[in-house]
Amino acid sequence: MRKPVIAGNWKMYKTVGESVDTALALKPLVANSNHCEVIIAPVFIALKTVADRIEGSNIRVAAQDCSTEIEEGAHTGEVAAFMLRDIGVAHVIIGHSERRQFYGETDTMVRRKVHAAISAGMTVIMCVGESLGQRDQGMAEAVVRGQLSGGLSGLTAPDLDRIIVAYEPVWAIGTGRTATPEQAQEMHAFIRRVFAEGHSENAAQALRVLYGGSVKPDNISGLMQQPDIDGALVGGASLKVESFAQIVNYERT
Ligand code: PEP
Image (cartoon, rainbow, N blue to C red; front, side, top):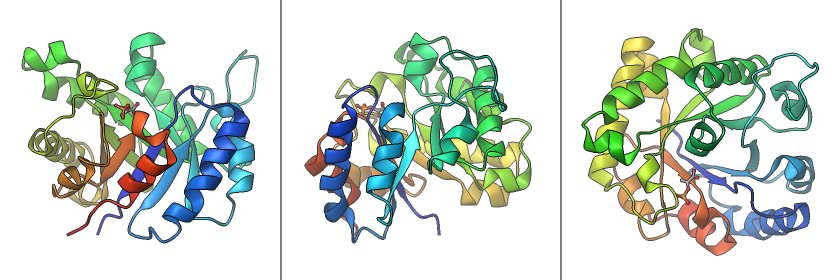
């Protein structure tokens, strides 16, 4: 059984104080949500304070990125994975489409970040997904296959336990346009097949594949009914405590 993961990506929203307030308000609303792992990803500077303030709860804190570099060094503006681990952050989102689109992140950089995070003992949420143009040209699967092999090559079998993949079609992020549950399921099943080819059937069956792209309280249940959808990476709707709590506590049949 794959335990679902519902993760909120707060992007570059909320001050440290607002992040703490949001996390503390969320805590009681998800305290009994043992059916899934609950993760929130505030901005870097809020990570430690939020992690400290919700310690002992069932909410985990994730970083939204980490450096490609494993060791400390002269890399102005970067934060190493081991430094995140040191402040109690166990998860990191890597290769989000906004980083790929606006900050020139390539599959090579994603792979280096994945390795840095794994060597620091972190769990990675690696994002993949095609643009609308790529989907319209029938390239969606080829793009996702390339991102999976580009980002995840060179990992050992035990490393794979610490990989979560988030399928986030770029055309569905922040647009209000969600992939239908069937469209998402098709790509999730494809991701699992590619993972089986590249690694093993066992690893593929254990892999959690999250869907991301305009997930909201009213569409989460339909998505979660699909056999290969193991949770969600939520952007906009995770910023509001009530809507994120409703997503975490989606109707289960
Ligand atoms: C995201 O940024 O990961 C995301 C899925 O955003 P949204 O839910 O706002 O589409």
